[in-house]
Length: 332
Image (cartoon, rainbow, N blue to C red):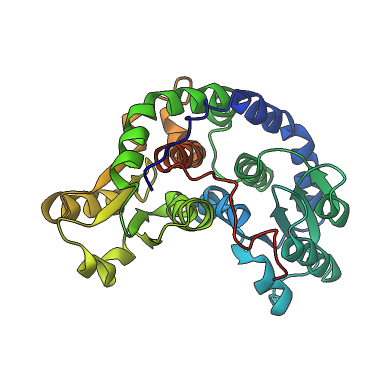
């Protein structure tokens, strides 16, 4: 595909969207306090496609720091096999960009039927918002991360609350700055990989969500390109046998506890794959983000970079991100 499309400008509302999400923090905290006071037993992050992808940072944070179990469940997995531990004392957190994803709306109803408390990020008045006990309108990934921070605070977890406050206040502008800093790199990646027959995308920890998201949502769904995502650790359990000097591999390297996994993958790719491209969050300045919580909030930056990279692919390949064969067009 040789035609190109004009590159869309960086989302002018990116700061406003994130700021509006942070502004919902006190309302989120009120809901969380109520659930904790009534006896919190566990937390489930539920979604499909981009919405389950957006829960990786929050789930990863709770897995590391929470005194209660936290799970990720795909919406239809919940509908077809309700977890035995879900019920009174469970907080179920859902998200849907449109608020109309039928599997996720059904999952909200399934979860409520168990006696769980159900909250969601969805458009006001949408079916998902109506199905939830409490609905918010924030950006899914940051909304769920704020939920996780409030759960930790409400259950007495060890947490630098002052640093969290500073980070959330600074994050909207820092995300915008990071996207601007990464523009040349993202343009180079899209240009280098636009005609590749298949692209492998690697990530670990919370960044794995956007390895999967870039491969499935952006490259497969929105660009009709063959792609596959692998956890940076699982990569060495088989997939690396497919790599040679001519293989297109993109590696997200986070600034969280899983960073050594990304560094290991980079060391291998530096030696055996001349086409490998890397996006390392540590290379980006994040003004106002305290170092002590950079690992917890920087995955939100990875999501913004993945979205922007998709726009560069759209421009370089001349394939509109809104084009679909089946999604929203046929019965499925």
